[in-house]
Image 1 (cartoon, rainbow, N blue to C red):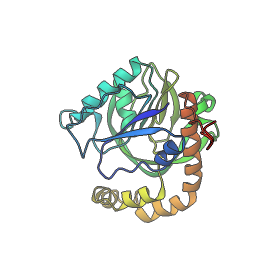
Image 2: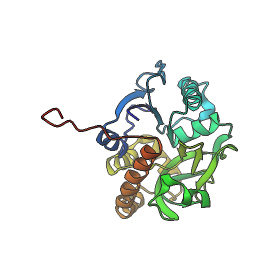
Image 3: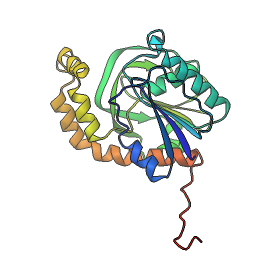
Image 4: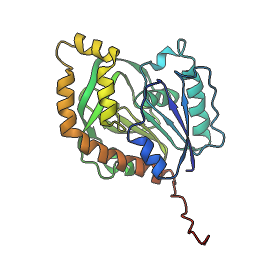
Length: 249
């Protein structure tokens, strides 16, 4: 994997731990942010991987956000060409939809740090090498999806059955935010949209509690993030760039 097409949905969206890892591996990244450029029509041609990040919209709102249809077409072309795909949060929902699963509003919301449990298939999947059977990971979503019939179910939480799946050998969807870092959490807590959710949650979601949980769980999450991304790149055939000596040898 040398070049990756990376899809963002919001102008403020940070890549967290993903950005430095990809750069460290010598992978060239093309960023497409649909909030900044809603008319963009990126092509998968010339790319060795596709990564889709999170966002506030729902898959079922393609009539409001036409770029969702563009992303679905990108995924379809990537699947036909066996190009590795990683979908995170909204990205996993779009991927699940393309694979024929139902994506819908959940009856409950997940926000903050939540225990995620690996299935038997998840425990044996190489992308989760280094993970325990249960890990506390960061969540921020109100939608959920069924596991595509053609995919392997890798992880679940008490509230959300669909937390991770694999399609084929190199296509993964993660509902949880494996890329999360502290600056992103602090920014996320201060967003007006999330402040409204906090106020309306009846005390279920509290910023101070999320920050306390962050102090407890973030270091482990960052280590798992690096491990999962390295595993994904290894699965996808990523190779570190050759180092040229000063002599040119």
